[in-house]
Image 1 (cartoon, one colour):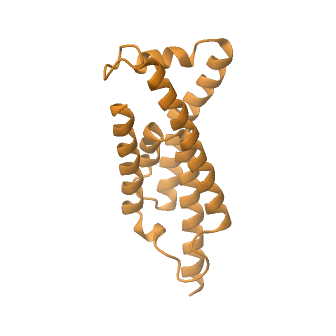
Image 2 (cartoon, rainbow, N blue to C red; image 1 turned 180 degrees about the horizontal axis):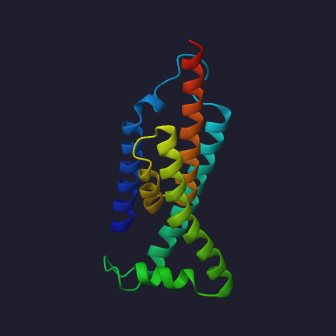
Length: 156
């Protein structure tokens, strides 16, 4: 359970670093709502994904854990083996791993750099500790917020 607490702290630290690095995006818009409808949708989806992921992670650790050993029962190697425990799990797991380990960092780093998002690689880091869906939703909410801020400052 200690590893899950450390994981939560690291996930929150990644979010804080993203927001602190992009204050120009996360500042309050001079007019309009605090959050757009799309931002709300992205945040709700992301938060639900974290809650579900953590529910299953806590159950996994409770069922298999043997302490803080990475290679013992309940460690990362057993977790990875269980991800590929059968053909259905393998199909889903390989899809998730490619999306999370290749597409998310590639897209956020390239697209984020083009849009002026600072430290876009932190979305990938956040996905390690929270969930892939949360990191993806948080990036999309950031881009939507950036679009709203830019539209407002353009018309002033």
